[in-house]
Every structure is written in C-alpha cells, then in structure tokens.
Length: 196
Image 1: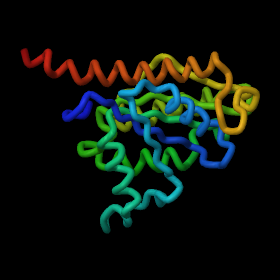
Image 2 (image 1 turned 90 degrees about the vertical axis):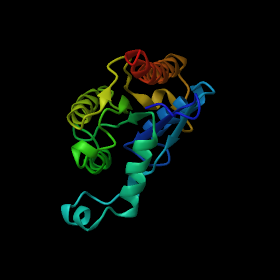
Image 3 (image 1 turned 60 degrees about the vertical axis):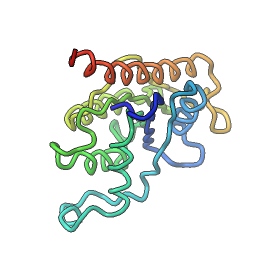
Image 4 (image 1 turned 60 degrees about the horizontal axis):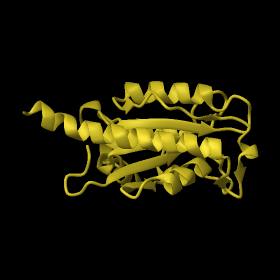
C-alpha cells in the first residue's frame, strides 16, 4: 500500500544475479535512472539470506530474513529482474520468495504489487524464467502486473559497462516502472473511493 505520510512511491528491486557485469542489475540501474522524482527504487542484496530451513524459521527468523521481510512489507511494489538458469528462476530469488511467503496469511508478499523483467545473453530473453517467476509470485499471493513486459535477449549487445544503452529497451523499462507507479496509485485510491 502506498505510504500514508507522503505521495512518494517506494519500489523494492530484487535481482537474481549479483556479478559485477550483471545484465539484470543493468535493468534495475536503468529503472532507477528513468524513474520519475516521486518514485524511489531501492534494491536488496539477497546473497546473505540463508536457504529456507524450517528449523531456522522455528527458532526465529535470522536477521537477514527479518531485513528481507521488512523491506518487502515497507515497499509499495516490487520489481524483479531475473536471469534464466536451466530454464527457470535462479535459486536466490526462489529462496527469497520462499522466506517472504511464510506464513501465507501474514506474508508481506500477500497482495503486494509486482512487475517482472529479465535479461539474458541467449535468444530466449528469460521468457521461461519469467513465466515461472510469475507463477511463483501468484502462488505466494502477490499481484503481478501483466503488461508491459521485457524479455531482453542477447543482452550483451544492449548493455555497456553495466548500463543499458539501447533506447528501445530503456523505453521498455520506463514503461514497466510507469505501470507499477500507476498500479500503486490506483491501489491507493480504490479503498478511499469504496468507502464513499
């Protein structure tokens, strides 16, 4: 839900790759560059989040998991950038969703607006990974924005020094950020209109 004390929109970006020249980090960087002044995009490094373990959960969430859940809960929307590993979602993203979705009734993912995009050096453009990610997020209770979409294939041709340089694809990223912005704004106004 949109922040009550200001009109700014806060988006949490989660990437499935962390290497220095990550193509998907370039997408998030572009989103941050293109976002209007009232939209703030922060990211969270998921590498320190331990693999989901029921015993760990029963003993109390580790600090890294608490940080993850808090960041998801405080965000107005989520923006995922996923590579495709063996035709599916990287383990680091699936693991973060597994933690954040527990327990479903209290999950910070429940009802959270989300958008998905992805970049790959292959010709598939992460299409299968994004389909799987959308299904996982839907099962976890998030509301995934269907359009617009971005399947950036042969991404090395469009990313230079960690920056997305193709104007066409930068426009596609801009459209995704705009769609989240509009969805959050609509989501914030609907309860007020329903109460009239």
